[in-house]
Amino acid sequence: MKVELSRFRVKPGKSALVDEWLQMLNSHMSEVVQTLDREQMKLEVIFREIIEENEYLYWFSVQGEAGEPCETSPFEVDAKHIEFWNECIDEEYGRRDAQPQVAMVPKAVAHAMAWKSPMESTTRFERREFICKRVQNESPS
Image (tube, rainbow, N blue to C red; front, top):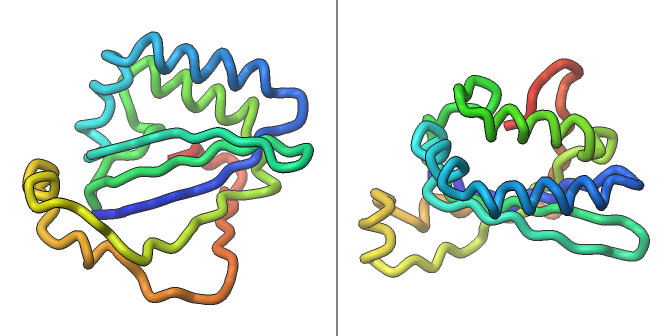
């Protein structure tokens, strides 16, 4: 199981579009949730914050290792996600990944998620920043 917390910077001037996109997700939750099975997404939460003058979105997710990527999805909501991404996310900044250190999961929750060993989803801490940048013409995951 992959446990991820990733930070993305929003392009300047795109805050109103982020408002629209997050509202669209919240108001179409039944469509959003139906995309999760093919992605093997057990849990996905989007956070938003402002630091100084910059706006950031954070994705927290627990996902199976063999989940399908967004760009192969037959669902309209995923196509809208890719459009939003291309318009609003600052690819120059890249994706900043935190390192999972402790996974505290009650047995009943782990069982419901078919998560055999939550502690195996943690990593050894490396004192460096993890920055992933997308190759040109590559869609977001």
